[in-house]
Structures are given as structure tokens and as C-alpha cells.
Image 1 (cartoon, rainbow, N blue to C red):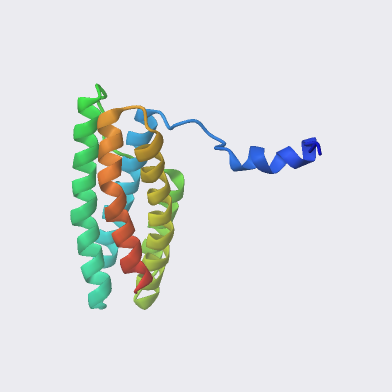
Image 2: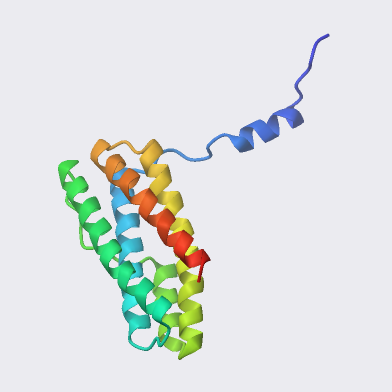
Length: 160
């Protein structure tokens, strides 16, 4: 019995294959830096007004952990022969910061948690992808160390 594969039968196989190449080291450094910067800035904003001890504790942890991951990525970038510029927010992150500044009281806390859930999912995808497929060994190692931290943040957010 012969099995004939039609073009239509191959489409799911093509979709399942990775649709993109590994992120360039400089792009990874820029993306990770922007993510960390967003985490620190949004945490600082929510800390100005939150009355919720869980939100306060989480925001303080974001500043500590994302300062540490920025330092790790920067050191790995230098080891990889890159000279990273100071991180800059992406347009989407700039808009989220503006939205957070515009919110007040419990609405700000709620917006912060919602933004954090989305931002951490994106960060996890970037870190996991670079840890698995990155071309600069030092950066790949840094990404691998950051993945469990981001997963821990997601777990905490899911409990809030």
C-alpha cells in the first residue's frame, strides 16, 4: 500500500517547523534589555501608589531580578564581543508605560498585573528561544539562567 502525500497534507508539517531563524546576538541583547527596562520602570510606577502588599512585594522583586538579568546579559554580551548600548523601550512598551501612568488606584494595580502577565510570557519566549537556538554561547548560557526566573515570576503572577 502506497501513501501519497499531497501538497495539502504537507501544509501542517510546514507550519509545525520553526518559522524563524535564531535571533541575532545583538537583537537578543536589545530585546532582553528593553524587557528588563520595562519591568523596572513599570515596577517603579506602581510602587508610587500601590496599597496592595502583594503588588508591592512583586514590584520590588521585579526591580531586583530584572536589574540582575540586565547585568547578566550585559556581561555575556561583552564576553561575546558585543558592546551593548543602554537599553531602550520598544514602542509597545512605551505605550504600556503611558497606560500605567494614566491609571490610578486599584486600576493601576490591575493594569500592572495584566501588563506583567503579557510581558513575562513574551520574555519567556525570547529567553527560551535564545537559550535553545542562540549563536553566542555566553548569551545562550545567560538566557538559560534567566528562563527559570521568568517562569517563577509567571507562577507568582498566576497566584495574584
